Image 1 (spheres, rainbow, N blue to C red):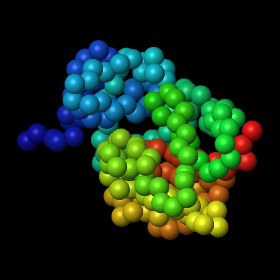
Image 2 (image 1 turned 135 degrees about the vertical axis):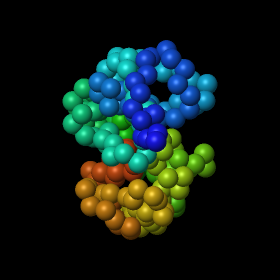
Image 3 (image 1 turned 120 degrees about the vertical axis):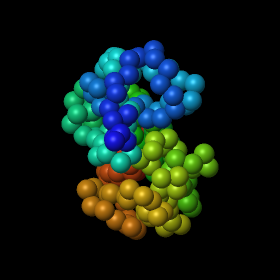
Image 4 (image 1 turned 45 degrees about the horizontal axis):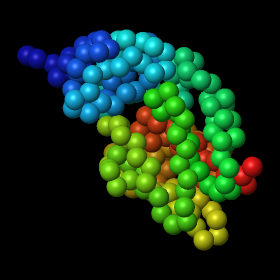
Length: 187
């Protein structure tokens, strides 16, 4: 009898054509997503050259977990840099993905978070549902987040929620990603 899980445990070397999917750096657990033609690069976070295929069914570290942030930039450091880089007043979400900071501006109305190409905040990873969550910026300027029937749920500050308000400093866990809410008055 062949075990289905065995194929995901094989180590892959950088430069190897590994096919489409998500992989984790063996040294720092940084997730990488590849399209069908991609070859594995060296890890942009730690320079590692060995990867294993990520499974959406296995428990994976979030990007704010100690295994990733210890090898990479400290959470407060990159988050402070993200805050400092924002010039216009407004509401934003920021995350540290694949060794770089990504900041998303939230506009009035609905912003969709998910894996689908139509998502306003696109997180391309199998742990993220196509339609994972919706952020609502109300006319009064409040932010609320709705779990959009996702497979892995929505966690805000460590608590699983379906619909909840969020404010500056809150952390949303969506799949393996951690998004930080930033409200700023600008420079």
